Length: 104
Image 1 (cartoon, rainbow, N blue to C red):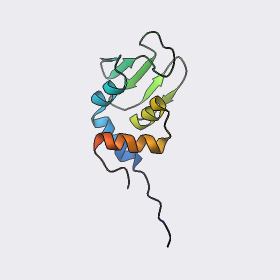
Image 2 (image 1 turned 180 degrees about the horizontal axis):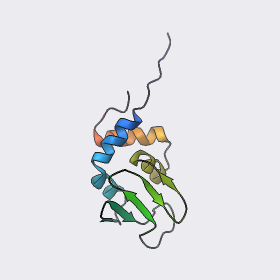
Image 3 (image 1 turned 120 degrees about the vertical axis):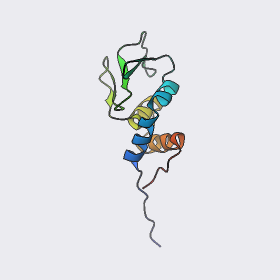
C-alpha cells in the first residue's frame, strides 16, 4: 500500500495568522508595542537591548531584524525563527493556534 504525503497549506495558515496578527505577535513578542501598522519589539533570539530594530508588519506579516538582516515574509516564518522550528513544524503550530487545518 502506498502512503500519500499530505501537503501543508502554508498560504492558508499564513492568511489565518495574518487575520489575528495583533493577538499572535503580541503573544510572541510581549515586550513590544504597536506603532501604526507595525509591532516594534526586541529580538528575543539575541541580546537586543532596546526595541526598534526588530519589527513585524501587522498588515502583511513581513518581519525583519534590521541589525542582523534576519527577515521573513509571513507569521509562519516568524514562528520558525522565534522558536527554532522548521517551517513544517511552525506551520502546524500556527495552524493549531488559529484553529485551521494544517493540510490541503
